Length: 368
Image (cartoon, one colour):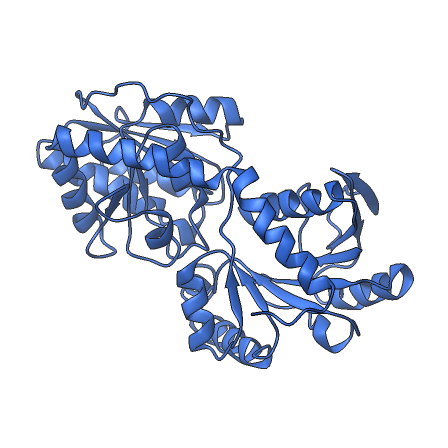
């Protein structure tokens, strides 16, 4: 069978993130099963118009305002396809109305409040309004998403058929779980793109609160992005320079070393589709303390594999951290449960049912 993936970015785009990595694994599995996959994405500076990644033919064209036109040309030139996957990132591709074949929508997260992190009041209002409108427009299109939180948001926006197929992780869980004492200083870690919607500044403020309350702690921040200079200024202003390390962008092996050394991952994003880095930390034997937002309440099982704070505030997060850091027995139980659960998200467990479903949709079978 032949599949067409529509995504604004491919994995070589400098702006690619977790959504693209996850998409790549699913599409590569379809190729491994003997299917043909074309992935259409925006062109970006320095990119070749075509390339092949993991057996997937990547075709690039257009940019902001012209992508859909180029996608339709790609469809006409290289079709027909058995299934078109219309991946939403703020805006959809409207493929059900021009592809003339089986089509599903694929979405990692409903942006919602994330619009406010990047745009002014008017643009944010327009963005949220059009997002709800387009999801209602897609009400009769089968949706694929990655968490129950996102499923519920889509249903509230009028979508009728939503399947949840969770993300897998490239991080292989430790074969055995070594001991990790809650020694001083408490080692905290944040793993995120340094962008407004990730609210890493809340993690820094949490560290300051912990130290004010007598909890000796230090923080490693892994990631890069537009907010790095603001975070560095915040750290200096709060007098935390000796307690915070900006590790930058690390390769997987380096990242895993840091995750394994940490006592806790802190996650303060406005919203996630799933919260893949929570599972990555769990695989290294590190539980997470997270904000009560979509995606993070799915990847973290409160009270079992980590803690979900009562509110989206550094004060609430600090309270949760202290409650865990002061109870070594509870911490050990939680990190063991987090590590054990991470095995459920190995790719070999995730890919089979998801790709079986994609094949069924390509055959035109009615979802049940």
